[in-house]
Structure formats: structure tokens, C-alpha cells
Length: 387
Length: 85
Image (cartoon, rainbow over all chains, first blue to last red; front, side, top):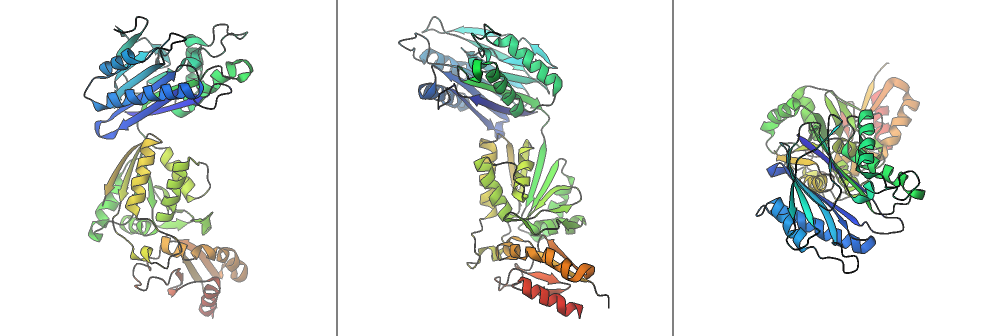
């Protein structure tokens, strides 16, 4: 199963920093994902620092694997200081440690209970309560659940469940029940909605309920969606040994999922080996990049290094909806969950001619950087095979 | 005489940075001038830069089977003219 995860946030009205903090990390080698959402006391910079510290510390604790998530959360719960004025703890948190088979461990301290949706029904998982040894009013819930394909988990900060509090329509705010109604309606309408869209939807709805649409607290919604992964393959660069061309071209041909070729020589190689003609756009360049070409059975064919360099730039800055080859490649990548790169190690000496007006990066380096961005910023699963 | 001329502009990385991006106007200019007697299109890569050890002769354009080195709009048009004769 693939875990589609995303979090949307909104700041409290008139604040310039987020008081909730979300971190998540994928561990492709262990087929594991950890995510933490923390809500810091108060709002603005102070809350931002508190929640950021709590969330990142908890993530580090859990990922170290020397102690269990339960133990890690307990340590944090027992050691979080108490605000001297308000006498409540400095931050609350929810954390999940889940693997690709759907085995999940969840801890919650102070945040609203997460919502588990299967077939548009809310499930009520069993939990264990652990009382803090140092603070009487603190306790955390521990869940061990098994998720199935199609399940969704929704974590949110109290900014969501308390949105609209004190208003005319919802005196007690949206509350968990209100959120469940919203979610069920949305899911009935769009059963395949992505985590990114659903989390945006929750946050926007919460904002719209607030009086004058000014959030009274930081609002965060984190959604996990367990679904079949969308696989993609990017073939770039000719193999180091030309004798292996046919073999790699066959691998490319057999791949089930979306396919892209980045590189003129590479496209010619695949065309030759698979006997599929290439046709081109009736333009030479769009923007500052060579235009795309087309091959039967391949979703995208672009030029190599220049397009990849530009794509990396767009991914890093978060630019989408650009109408050129790199923009198309960005969409191609973001519409996939598991991205496989087949990277040819052959160098074209002409690319390193000092007379070239622009610097041409080494393919391997660009792909390495791109893999990093895709993993860390867009939470994709990435694998690279050199050939 | 009804000769057909095929013009292929290399859009590989080397050719593109060396100036084939500037050959864009051929796409509009040539049909206006020669109608459908000449066909201009881009190709992903002609594979010439990695063979020609003088490298810096990019951008390359192929007019039928003749290679135009360090191609400019003028050079390509001249090559087309000689093929149409």
C-alpha cells in the first residue's frame, strides 16, 4: 500500500507564524512512515517554537528505534513543562508510526482524537490510556490499528474542532461530530480525493465557519490515505555499456505504470531498440526549453539535462502549472507516488566543452538532488537505478 | 521538378544551448517561402555532437542527408536553396 500524506495549515488571525507544527518522514528502506502534529500553547512565534521542538524531538525519538513510540511519547509527556500563568502544558501532540502493510501505532496527548474512515464509516478503535507520572492532568492514548486499502486517517489540531466557537450558528464550535459530517459528505462526493485536496478542504471549511472568516486559533489538518501506489519510471541517459541498451530498453518497455524519457539520445535509443517512431511538436522551444516529442506507449518525452535542471528548480521552489517541458515533467512527477529513475552513466563529452554558453550539470547529480526534493518535500517514494 | 526537402533541427542539449533555440523562426519562415516542398521539424537528437570530435560545431541541422554545422537561419536557407535546384 502507498500512504498518501499531506497536511494543510492556517495561521491564527493577525499572527505571522504558525502555532501548529507538522513533520513527517518516509523511510523507504524500512517501508515506514512517521508523522507528528503538535500544537503549541498560545499562538505566534512562541507557539511555533514550542510545537516545532515537540514535533521534531518526538520524530527523532521514534525514528531512532532504540525505544518504542509509546516510550518516546511518554518521555515527552512527562517532561513537557507547564505554563506558569495558564497552568497547562506547553504543547500537545499526535504521532503515528505506520508501515506499508498498514500496521500503525498512534499516540495522542491533548490533541483531538483522530478520525479513522473506512468505506465512508467512522471506526472506533480501542485504545489504552497512560497516565503521566509527573502531571496529574496529563494522559495519553495509545492505539494499535491495522489499516486496509482505501482507509483514511485524519488528524487535526483543536483549531479545526473548535472553529466557529462562540458564533451564532455553532455555539460549541464545529466539534468532532461536525467534522465527521463534513468529511463524509466530501468523501461521498469524491471517493478518490487526494490527501492534499482533503486537508485543504478541511482547513478552508474550518476557516469559513469562523466569525468573519478570521481563524481564532491555528488550524491544521493532516490526512493519510492508504491506496494503491501510482508507479512512474523515468529513463534518462544512455547506459554506460552500449551492449546493455537492448536489455534496459526492454525493462523500460515492460514497466507497468507511467513512463517518461528525458534525453534526446535516450529517446533515440529507446526508439531504435523498441522500434517505435518519435514524432515532435511543431515547435522548437517553449519558453527556454526544447519542446517535447512523442512516442507510442510513453507518457512524456523531453530533452535531458536542461529540462531536468529546470524541473529541479521548479520542484524546489514549488512552482507548478508552467507550460513547458519541465512543467509537464513536474506534473508527471507530482501525479505519481513511487518514482523510479533509470539513470544512464554515459557522459557526452560535448556537454563539457568550455565553449558552451551555459553550465551543464552531471546527470547523476541532478537526479540525486531531485530524489531528495521529491522525498523530503513531496513525500514521494523514490528509487534510483544506475545503468 | 518536384523535389521534397526534409529539414531536421537537432534539439539535443548541446545543440539547444549552442543556438538551435534561435532556429525557431525556420518553422514559420520556411512554409511561407517554400510551401509544402520543404518540411521542417525538430528531432530529439541527431547524435552528432558526441561523434564529431571538434564538438563546438553545434548546433547541427540536417537538410536531407547533408549536415549543416554551426547552423544559422541563413545557412539553413542556403542549404535548402541548393537542394531545391
